[in-house]
Structures are given as C-alpha cells and as structure tokens.
Length: 157
Image (tube, rainbow, N blue to C red; front, top):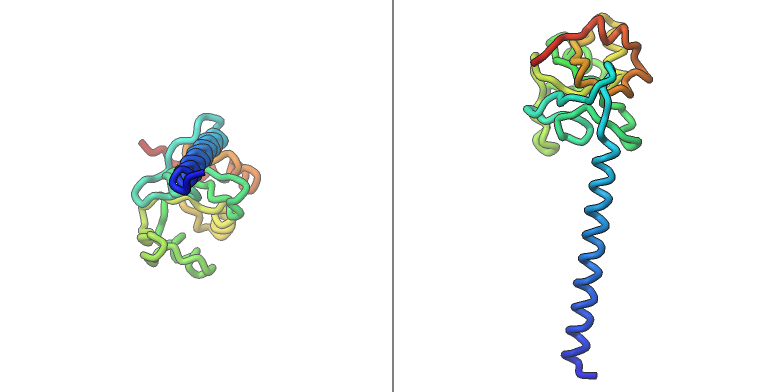
C-alpha cells in the first residue's frame, strides 16, 4: 500500500472519529441542559437571577444546581452592606474583585446566587439579604424553610 494513501486513510479515520466524539459531546451538553431545567421555590419555572454580574454555579445567570454544586448556590439574593460585611467576617469575601476568576466583587443592590446554608446562617443572625423567590431554586428548600424565604421576599420585575 502506498504511504501517501495510508496516511490519507489514517487522517480520514481520525477526522471521522473526531466528528463522532464531537457529536457525542454535543449530545451530552444537550442532555445536561435538559437536566438543568429547574423549578423555583414557588413551584414555577426558575427565572433568571442576574446577568450583570453573571451569577449562578454555572455562571449563566440562574441559581441552578446539580450534584457537583456542593455549596448549593440556589438562593437568589439582593446584596446588602450588612450581609456583605457578615459573609466577609465568615471567610467568604464577596465584595473584593478577583479578576483572575472573572469576579467583579459585589455591591449592595447586586443580585447573586448564594449558598443556601450561608443565607440561612445570615437569617439566623438577622442579616439575611432579601430574596427573589421566582429565581430561587427549589433545592433551597432542603436547607431553608419556605416561610423564612417568604419573610425576606421581594418582587422584582
């Protein structure tokens, strides 16, 4: 067999395998997205929390979650000066920018997907930020009582 022909055959096989791998990756991405269609704490389709700054475990603007999200970043909260000071005192500084992680630092009024357990801690200390129920993932209810979230709920357009 001619060396050129053999080389072309190998390249054709590799290109074919690459297409199959890409197709499989695309299918996995679609399946992952379907798994992430989520419900909020009031039983309707999860709404976006914030696109500027872009929030969420997946940094897609939604407080969606999956098994890799050990922090359960599911509570859509509106930052306050008090909460930002509290979380910083607890070792999670959300107000300082970290450009290496494309994190602008949060300011009062910014919306952000918080860990449900940190929100509950803040609630118990009297410094919990307000919550957007329609943008808070239902998994939050495994950590926080709905009545606590409702006490701190705001309606945002």
